[in-house]
Amino acid sequence: MARSTAKTVSEYLMEMPEDRKKAIQAVRKVIKKNLPKGVKEAMSWGMIGYEIPLKIHPDTHNGKPLLYAALGSQKNYMVLHAPSVYIDKKTAEWFRKKVLAAGKKLDMGGGCIRFRKVEDLSLPAVGALIGKVTVQGFIQMFVKGRGGRG
Image (cartoon, rainbow, N blue to C red; front, side, top):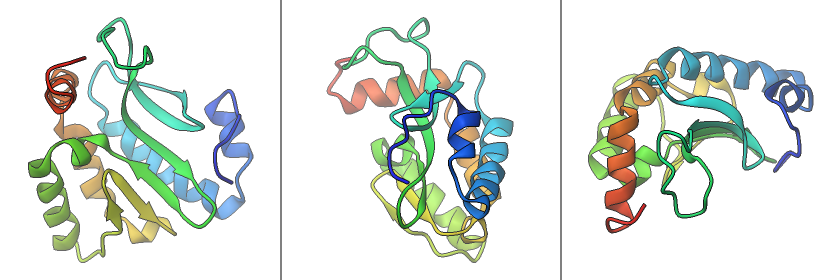
């Protein structure tokens, strides 16, 4: 399964094989528990997206809500997209250290954290990452990363 056309998170989960569904649900639970106030869950870009609504930050480069994080099932792995680790090198290094301290290997490229089973992840590190950056902090990172443009 690559990019889904599901309209809801429930539909998206129903498309998955049982083992992937359980893994995605476990990571989703950690994400939802740690999301900063103001971030909303929705289907976005063919995955489960965690977005900063346009009413909070309307000045985006593509007219769509800012993607704070996303969770998806690809053909050969599952993925947590965490733009904060792509945008901010300090956050990336902090996250890398947390994962390694938990005794886990990290398969990360840019802001994509790939995993084949939930046990490959440090769920406490994922929760800490999701809760680390406030909505306003993320918006500032994003604007700074775009050279001051929304």
